[in-house]
Image 1: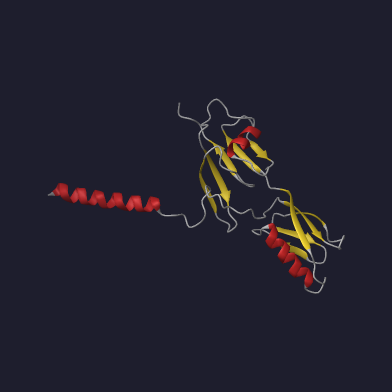
Image 2: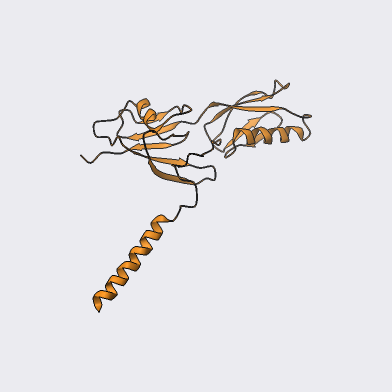
Length: 187
């Protein structure tokens, strides 16, 4: 009789554990491919306001997540796509400054990626569009002899402010601001 109670209790605990491990984290995971790039500290953008040479320039996103523009002052940009920033700037400029402003925002410099762990030269590296986990390792000088070459851990910050850490394969894409950690293999 005691064995039956123990077996039911064990089955209940096991079921609860399995349900908890299947529950989502409430946000996108690092393996999702539909990730959309948003601006953050360290990015550099070129803003062109057609016909307005004094407003057109290259701007770096500050630690506070804003850029400083003539006429507009501090403009918050953290978490916005370049398209959303174009719309926001056009709206701000049309509010008493310009009539029907035409604004274009282009990326100049992406924030860096960080590569840690079992690579030859861990550190901060420039992001290149289309970069994969394996190409990031190549930029860092390749693997050490102890490296686990089959998969890596990536920590990514999302536009809603949360961060997530997960496993990625060598051919998975990485994004600006990612922290890539190459682990040590067991044997």
